[in-house]
Structures are given as structure tokens and as C-alpha cells.
Amino acid sequence: MAKKTVYILIGTLVTIIAGYFVVAATFPKELSRFPIFVLVILLDFYLWMSVRKNVFTWKKVLRYPFTGIYWLPMLLLIAMGLVSIFINIYTWNPHFATYLGGIIFMIYTAKLFVIIFFLLADIIKIIRHVIRFTYHKKKMKPCPDQANRISRARFLKNIGLIGGGFVLSGMVIGAIRWAYDFRLRRVYLRFSVIPPQLEGVKIVQISDLHLGSWTNKQALIDAVNVINDERPDFIFFTGDLVNFLTRETYIYKGILKQLKAKYGVFAVLGNHDYGDYVKWAAQAEKEQNLRDLEDLYDEMGWQLLRNENSLVNVRDIPVAVVGVENWSTYDRFPRYGDIDKAMEGADGALFKILLSHDPTHWDKVVSQKYLNIPLTLSGHTHGFQFGVELKNFRWSPAQYMYKHWAGLYSNPTTDSPQYLYVNRGLGMIGYPGRIGILPEITVLELTS
Image 1: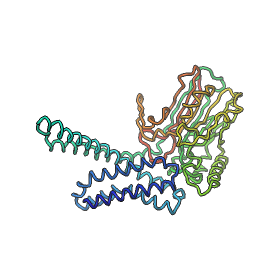
Image 2: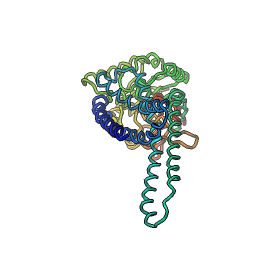
Image 3: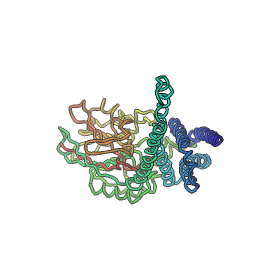
Image 4: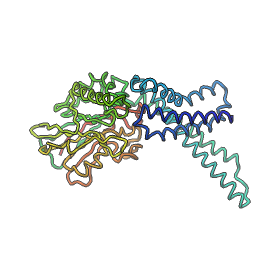
């Protein structure tokens, strides 16, 4: 057993070192997250050391399959890393990459749930050992019954194992059942003063399609039909059309081209649209990828706004649709947005609508300096694709990173209403599913 432990430790160390170079070569933008990868690997090793003694007592018919499943995500990660050295990972079939990454993500998520309970059980054991060799020994009192102590630790670990099974099952269901179970959310934006001509103007917002992860054409067709049935005045797309490359979109171009709105379809870029997550052989390739995306928007009939605005005459009222490029308070996301440039020529508009992919832009810039923009539409957070939304209670891990992570918000410091709406996204990335936070099509209506 000792030799096997040494081999596992050596293998873990080699995997971590090799992983660093692979990530640097293929996912340079994600290199800042490499410590998380190292932590996951170490926790994976910890969990295996915790369960292996029991596993080795099982019959071969159970032991071998369990061992294979346990190490499957690690083996898949290693295989992906090795293959990506010789074949650019961005040229892989997007559907294959989505499901492969999804399997890895789901199994590791279930493992991490188990690890929490195993760590808790081991911490309790350590504390009790400390008590045993200090307080009890000093006071000459009998030690706690060891059998009871072990059974309590085993109880916690059993809870972890059972819970991990539920987590894995839930994530599989989320990928199969809820990935494309989109919700139509209606929001009425009430303003104390609004030109009567704008009363009842209907806006449809979609965001974060991430077409590189999309695997169900019929679901996209259904979404387009639902949007068109609303007969919207405007359709706004707030960024992240792709995961990495423009070519991910081509098989869906004909479907998205069918979106129709009275005054047009407008879009902005999100952090994934620039190609920043790809290690390009030459800068010219990255620039061409972005030009191809701009051409795609033209072919679909969507107006892409890149730090600019479009003045639209809505029932004789000038409305400015302002689009800024991605701007985030977090350093790992790009800051290409220039709202001053985007607002040039928009002063004459009686109503302004800002499209800005990242909601932190509204929190740090718009709500502080641009109080004359009554409505901002964002996306980006996905609501973490996981959480709980009830009538009087909402929770998602997204709230620990984003102050405004899903739904409607207003600026409490202004006399006139200033709104931000954060769309939960229609697509997915990373985990190919949804649990609790379902994909969204938003219908917003202006009213007094």
C-alpha cells in the first residue's frame, strides 16, 4: 500500500506540473485559475486516500468499475491536455467538447460535496484526538469511547457519499431536463414621467447564447418563435454569442436570422466574443475572427453597437439605443467599453437604453455618473446556472461575486427611476445544464 501511495503522489505532482504548461499553452487566459485546479487535484487525492481502504475490500466486480469511474474525470483531463498539445482544442467538435467538459464538471462537483463531509469528519476526529491527549489525560478522566467516535465520523462520511450521489444525479437531470427549459419573464418598467408615445413599448432581451455549447437546434427554433410571437418593438442581445470562436455560430445563423422586431435587433459584445480565451498563432487570426463575427451580425440583420449608439424614431420620439463594449470591475474580464464615446450624439434623445454585457459596469459607472440613462440591460452572470428562486427568497453562488446577478434592480439614490435588468442567459457554458436558475427570455414593457 505504501508503494501505491508514493506512486499516486508522484502521479499527482506530475499531473500538476504538466497541467500548468498545458493550460499556459492552450488556455492562457485561465492561467490565473490554475491554483483552483491544483486544489481540486489535491482534494481528489485526499478523497481517494480516504475511501481506498474500504474499496480494496470489495469484490473485483465492484472494485474495478468504482475505481475507473472515480479516476475518469482525471483521466479525461489528462487526455484532453495531451491531445490539445498536438490538436488545437478550439478545432474540436463543439458538441463533443461541451459534453466532455460537462462530464468532468459534474463528477468533480459531486466529489467536492463528498469531500466537504469527509473533511468535517476528519476535523472532528482530530479535535477529539487533541482533547484525548490533553484535557482527558491531564484530568485523569477516561477517554471517550473510541467505537462511538469512529461511528460518528463514519456517519458524516456516509452522509457525504449519499449526498454526493444526489448531487451527481441532480446535475445529470439538470443537463437533460432543464438545459433548454427556458422561461418567459415579463417585467413592467414604471416611470413617473415618460413620453406618452413610449407607453407600452415592448422590449425583448436575450443574452449569453454561448452557441459553442448549444446542442439542441429545435430548442433554439422554439425560442425564436416565442420571441417573434411577442411582436416586440425592440430585440436586444446583450453579449456572449460564442464561447471561443466565431465559427461556432454558423450552423445557427439561419435560425437567429428569423428574429424580427419593429425597430430592429441590436447587440453588443460580451467577454467571450473577442477571442481573448484562445491562444492564437498570430494576432491577425484573432482580428479576423472578430471581423467574421461582425460580418455574421450583418448577415443576420442585427445591428452590432461597439461603443456607439443608434437613434431610433419611436412614434415621433427619439430613442437612443446605446451599446458599450465589455467593461468589468474584475481584472480577468476585458475593459474595452467607452461609455463617453458610446454616448456621443445621444443627447437629443428623450429616452436612452444602454446595452452593457457586465452588470458591474452599471454598479460602478452608470449608476454613479450617467443618471440620464433610465434603463440598462446586462447579462454575463447566468445566475451561476444554479440556485433557488422562490416567491420571497432567492439564492445563488453568483451573489457572492455580483451585487446584481439576476432580475430587476433600481438605483435608490435617484429621484427618477433608473433601472438595471440582468438577464439569466439563454445558453450555458461550463456545466451544460441548469438547476433552479432556468434559461430566460425577458419581455420588458415601458409604462407610467
